[in-house]
Image (cartoon, helix red, strand yellow):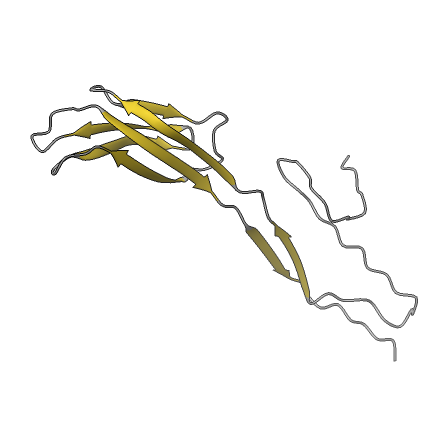
Length: 137
């Protein structure tokens, strides 16, 4: 059985939410109706960053702990690169990523990096309800 509580604006933690709208009328000739029901859920944004990580010749694997709910946006700032140096990022997911730096000849190199990952959440749900107005005139 699902417990039902009155809605109060606040911070809640759950895997899922169910909403119920109870309608009542003191006039027996009218049934209440709803034309639009809106629920907006705004989850806190989450950011993750590190400075001066060393990506060795075999690359660097970064693991998010805890994992994001979905793969985040990722910004990399590499320091001390020479002309023609570049990076290759693999295995990018909600749990982390792997990055390796190469020079213009595709040889692996050692580089210091800064990283920033962020996931912004806003879920918006709108339901158009069927009108139910009855009159006993």
